[in-house]
Length: 205
Length: 205
DNA sequence: AAATTATTTAACATTTTTGTTCAACAAAAA
DNA sequence: TTTTTGTTGAACAAAAATGTTAAATAATTT
Image: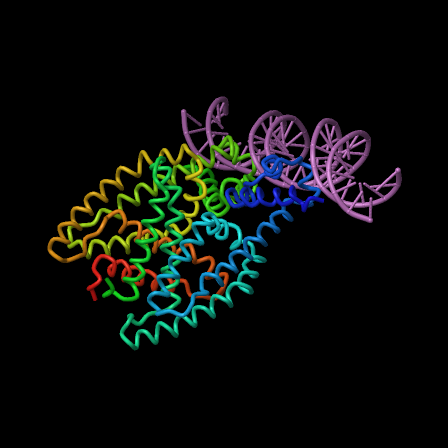
């Protein structure tokens, strides 16, 4: 039939609901209703809530895995520029998936199966990327282009400042309901780049 | 009677459960059981789950409010040292309340009543503190001690790097189950101080 | 056209969770 | 000592959420 439009719609809405409310907070009837299908249809495609959740989670983990690969796939360029590119790409990824981090932290980490899955699939890619970055940083440090520093720590700093920009967004918007998010995100991304540049080489700019 | 030991215990366990699992995920029977009291006892003291939640939330918001005040109550000292002190105090507060941020972000922000409460009670204190910090930063910038910078942005950076150190902790521990948290936190706090110092004055150290 | 698949409705069954009640008893306060 | 307050257990009621079924119909495939 017409390539399972309804099934996809269910998954799509389930994604939104699970991301916003978590497994415990999401309601299957609400998902069905928002997807514009009957309650029974939901169970027709996905036997249980748990199963529906697994599909959503599968997609999200896949997405996360790919994002790690994509964010790090940067053409050959000087390490300083590369780091800037890294910050910007990561920021952009978060712009497109603003509540993914919260979801991952709330749901994946407490569930051993998924924690295990992440460890198996995303971690090796990440470790590899970190090792390469470390080599480039070391080389650049020898030339005096950057200060000596730990690639893993640098990455944590990048993720940390970028993530936070999105995590506080709901707080800010509840404080200033009329705020301009476009402008906010633009400014934050620049700020974050500055902060990281500062971090790898205090003399830049 | 013996100063409501059981009632306190219920609240204490409820706090843990709500913080870990959120309102939707926590179970009243489990709370009662973990508190070592009967199911009926829980409802004897707190009519409904909602009401129990409100008590927990009340305490947490109070705590958060106080922490803002405490963290900023720093004796007169040069602004650079003051900022370092700020980072360390904030980090320490988080050490003692590692899953408070997640709770606040997950539960408070989506509930308009609490968002409103925070806005009313914590925000003025914060705004005041930011304004004072800004004045000190400006004065120091005139003397060339620090670079010109926005106090609100600086605070966001501080909160961001500190918070992240705690938010990723569960990820790290699921990756490395035998990791030494004491050492990790110690290192992160130092890193964060360095990062912020760098930020306010790239020439320091 | 027949068979299969998608879909709805609406009722119903099941399970989970929350909340109530009541009788009995223990502990503390009056 | 009487009264009040705290506490339990066990059963039960009510509500909320999940999951099932069957009959009917629409759409699609064979």
